[in-house]
Length: 148
Picture (cartoon, rainbow, N blue to C red):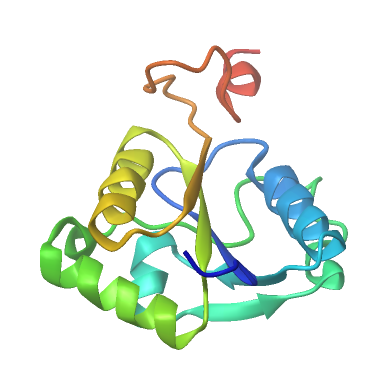
């Protein structure tokens, strides 16, 4: 596997409290560690339609107090098809994105697992859901704030 130089971040499915804080932390930590960061707007749909912007630390300044996700989010039927995932992979490669961080719930992370296995893409899944619909994690972004 080639060395990872650029990571893409996307939020998918329904938004949840804490997504902006996660986007900020991922972006700043990645840049501090020497990675390039590309933000993918509108989740998997944006990965297919090439809605991708390079992020610097200033892109994530003062976002933690905003609700939802600055990257916006969408559900994407096209990504559920092999052709849609191929198109997403082609866009990812054209943008020189080597790995992804996917923030979302069950559908988002299931899609990430399938995408990773089909294209050998390194993906970190970060649970973000108000529905508590993921097996395994005791806590997710958004679940505690939704309850309280």
